[in-house]
Image (cartoon, rainbow, N blue to C red):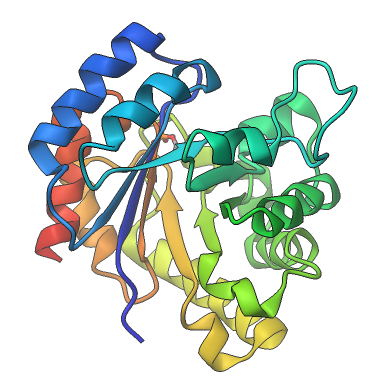
Length: 254
Ligand code: PEP
């Protein structure tokens, strides 16, 4: 099964709507017209409306960084799947380690968001990964397996090709430390094994598993050359078009 690479930029809490215009215009002009690698930008909510108009002029897709599991109502400060769809958002990052760490999200609460996203035709980018303590204690695969099982419980098999999983070792996020190519492949292959157990061989072979954690143009080619690494979720290096496009180019060459 050949899976198209997905390179997704997680801008986190960076870029005003005005700054968003400049960055997306640059990305549009560097890698926005190619179709061999899927490219997605995930700016803050406040930039989505502007971003939506700009990505309409290119092949770049739009993602959000979070979403409420509820469809509407008295949830002050929250954003629903329908609101994202209305802005032509395609992907939504869910369960990022910063949301787990600072906002109390758990496999169980993120599962509700994943199911709400897919019901509304949004493609979830479901984030998982171990902390440094967990890795040092030899618990990486156990942690990641339970994140997959619990976070993807009841995921509808007929929508499996919309699922994206992002393996992001917490110790590699924003730290400049990257998993080696072999470390990433070991965990990605194990994630796919769990997906096979949950959904069957052929469904699991359609799921893209992204690596995230200090990916940059210099290390992207090695990581992307691994058989179960189907793209990247990029934080810091997604904030300049030069670095982000460099990673897309590594994927195009891979
Ligand atoms: C992220 O937060 O999803 C991420 C991978 O960040 P960075 O690339 O900065 O490590």
